[in-house]
Image (cartoon, rainbow, N blue to C red; front, side, top):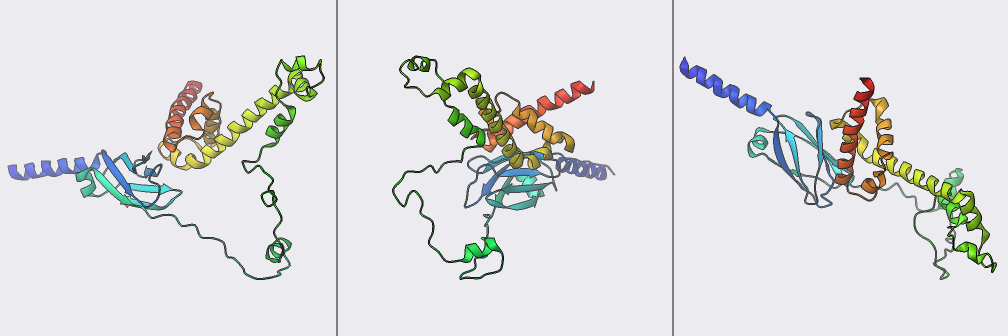
Length: 264
């Protein structure tokens, strides 16, 4: 009878060990970029990303489902096994995401659709500025506000001295004195924040809210809350996913405290 009790105690201890979440280290194997791969524990609703070497650490327990996803890889899910729990390590091989091209039709095929028929008609390509040796701009197209700011010019107080000789354009001076240049600069900054906020939302929202839940009607408000931070551009523009994730987590904690304060 005593032996049976000890067996039951051991079995219960083993079962409890498997039912508790532990810290598991992981390593991704892939032929393409290993950094910023999203690792989501769908069962425990926790989320992390890989470093430059494809390594990660995540909390998990027996039979949890881990999901691996990135732009460059096909989505993969695995179930945590007893061996993974015992070894406290996971090796995952991901396959590269291959994007297929749209079907190409060779020859003149007239369908009656103007846009389609134009694409399939023969003709010489238009001459661009490179063909005739003229330097041209190939960067990101300017927004309407950026173009208006460029046209307004940059006002500097020293320009006022140039008025005596009539050698300074009036636009920068008039726009500077009237406040139009300052207004355009503010508008450009607002548009930059808005574009960055929407990019961050598109890239992170789905996975971030798995481990940081919010009501659906509060999710967009949360990203506007992030964009209102004076350091939003500093911490999110041209930064790694890891840096942006740290910023979002910090703002999430602030947002939750604000919500709780309003409710009390």
